[in-house]
Amino acid sequence: MAFGRQTLSLVLFYWLCNSAAFAVILRTTEKSVWANEFESIELTCLIESISTNNPRIEWKKIKNGVPSYVYFQNKISGDLEHRALLREPANLLILNASRSDTAQYRCEVAAIDDQKPFDEILISLAVRVKPVIPRCSVPDAVNVGSSTELRCIENEGFPQSQYQWFKNSEELPEDPKTSSKFYNSSYIMNIETGSLKFRSVKKEDAGEYYCQARNEAGWSKCIRQSMEVYDLDIVGIFLKVLGGVAAFIFVIVGICQIQKSGYCSCKDHRETNYKVPQHENRMEYTTPDEGHFRHKSSFVI
Image 1 (cartoon, rainbow, N blue to C red):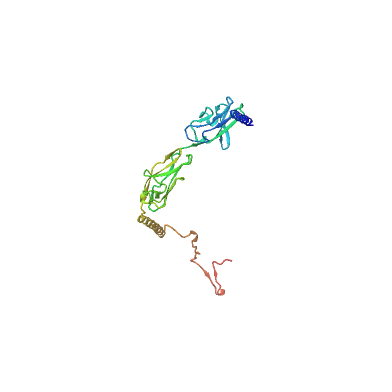
Image 2 (cartoon, rainbow, N blue to C red):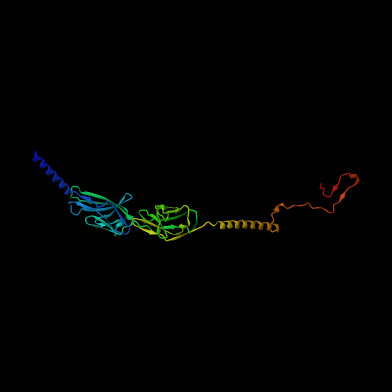
């Protein structure tokens, strides 16, 4: 009985070994890969077990759910042509990676002489793109106590950039309350949108500002821009308002003088008065027989 069990175990072990020996088995060192733009990246497709000589190897790129060949019939094709090569045993080396290479890649190996003749591995590739120079907006001058906003944006970086503001070459902390130097400042920084808002500007907020956009691929910054802070000029505002009122009064007085001088007629020409012409040599004909009846020359029969 014990002999029969040993025999069965040996047979089962032999069958498992043969099954593994005649099956295509693939593995990869990393299923999710990152690469920087313009650099090289290798997607690994390692053949752990195979019996067939010269198996068929193919690589496909899957983007937006649509597959396309990048290695087919022993040559690189598609948008990786002249930018990639196959390395032993079945690794795909992409040269000069671009943002368009971000996709899923599938390594497929077919071996007709193996009991398990096919295996595949799916690898995700994401190409990081360095941010371009961001567009920065800094006001030239603001008044003490007023609110203002500095803006910074760029749309080319991948993953999405985060933003950091600098004043006079010194990095501003995201929360001013964490720094003794900027404790009294009223700004609010949003590192996701690049906004730097001042709720109430102070004299010490004046200086040179610039913004830096950064992600895992690198960083870029805009040029320095100066922001000046002025005290509110109450006297100047009053004089400007007074000057405006005086100019308005001067215009009104000028119009009245023109009307009085007769250069402007305000009467409508349609209101001309017409008088009935008077006849100087009117003749009246009256006889005693006519009594009180008068016959005038203007009477018409």
